[in-house]
Length: 162
Image (cartoon, rainbow, N blue to C red; front, side, top):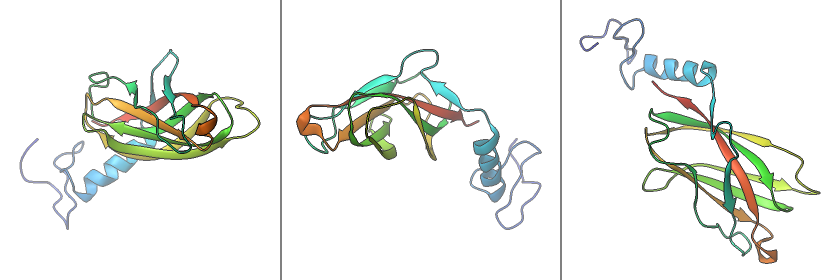
């Protein structure tokens, strides 16, 4: 509903009971509420995650691997978590997520696996807004790459932004 906001007080602006003027304090408060209270969806759902390989050098990012194909998530969304489902070997790792055609960085996590990988590890990341229909790709680096590339299986959790 376009028009004069019904609550125009120092950057606080509601256009109606359910919508806020973009960039206003009300908009930001509603976004924080949604970030906390809306359900988290996962991709892929009911399937194995994407396989991401490191380079065969210490701390070298491997080739980009597709985690979410373009046009799969048709609304703007926030990446909320990264799930590392499997790891092929011990080491210290850095995993980077990228979005869109320009591969803009969305999230970066660092973790270690010592004594074997014992199951799914979930990392919460700050919600970065990703445009609808954007692809998500990932790259992995390992502290022990000279001993051979490491592989991980990863998936993401996300929230749709209305």
